[in-house]
Length: 94
Image (cartoon, rainbow, N blue to C red):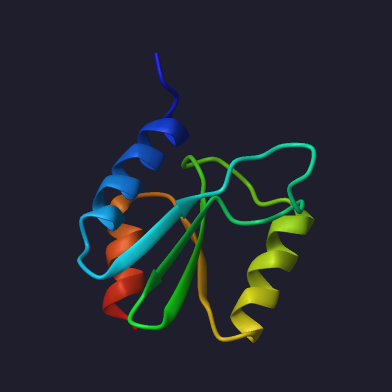
């Protein structure tokens, strides 16, 4: 059975990929990946959305916090997402 973060990932990716004129990438971890990168990168209307997906009790690592902060400093909308409603809120606020 899939855990809460895997279920959230599926819901978020389905919602984002249904948005016209956008491009969504699920960042896969591995030995050559930059550590701390957000789980999902989404580009729409010239805006980059960087989403770190977490289960309700999940916590960010220091590297994840740093990556989100750096992406925001570069103009991206970056945040922690614990539900599909969090994603919708991010889009409503931009």
